Length: 330
Ligand SMILES: [Zn+2]
Image 1: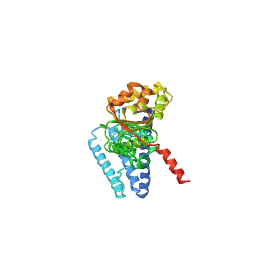
Image 2 (image 1 turned 90 degrees about the horizontal axis):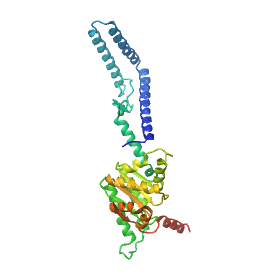
Image 3 (image 1 turned 135 degrees about the horizontal axis):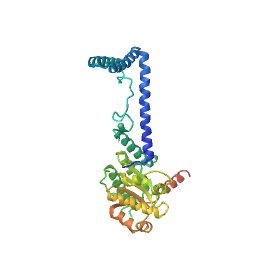
Image 4 (image 1 turned 180 degrees about the vertical axis):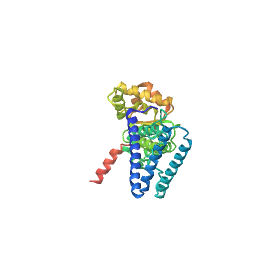
């Protein structure tokens, strides 16, 4: 997977601040220790002297093996003494060298000319945080859905709206609890205010908490981002993320501005994800015919062929809540 320029730059910035932090910590440690143990200053000086002695010996030429060996012994002894003092003072460091987070690339992001695994990891985290942004704004839990808002009177088909919704609810909760990349895609269909957004957010949150890369977007926002990036008004890789993330939750499909661009994007995202066997959850107020009218047979046949339908019923919960509040205040 490739990452956007913004993600790369943010990751490189993080590495830079790691290097700065390591440098500042090493500096602070030195300041603290030399005040308490002036002998450390002498050791530092002596270590620098062994370096000088070595260069001189090499410049002088001749058989210098004995000299080199004795300088090395002296150097090791000094280093050990320094480590001993620091250890006695309760420090974990053995010298005043900066300690990088990544021992492979020393927090430069590159190791033997290749991108280091620490940089890849950072970009992965940043990009996953970026796509989960929509989730943290509005966390949703299954427990918060109040089934008392659904009518308990059985309808002509037998089940009451409450019983029907209890089944939908249980299905969604199990789907989220057992979420992995083999689960089917879902189509949450039903009138406004019947809990589709709530349950699709709860599924998205649960999958994200389980460590999956989840993208949750209301259709209006997703398509407007795609459009801006497609026409070069903004940079980003939303389309690639929507196609490759572990779970895409597309909320309120049909409320976006109607353009041929949206229809084409929707088709290529759904199709790519189906081919790659990645689950998608779509919620919509549109009926089967409404979907057909708006997006055409090609998209609708892909959806009906591969998505498990869940029918939401009931009266608008937001409106009922407002009505309850009004009666309370009367
Ligand atoms: Zn590294």
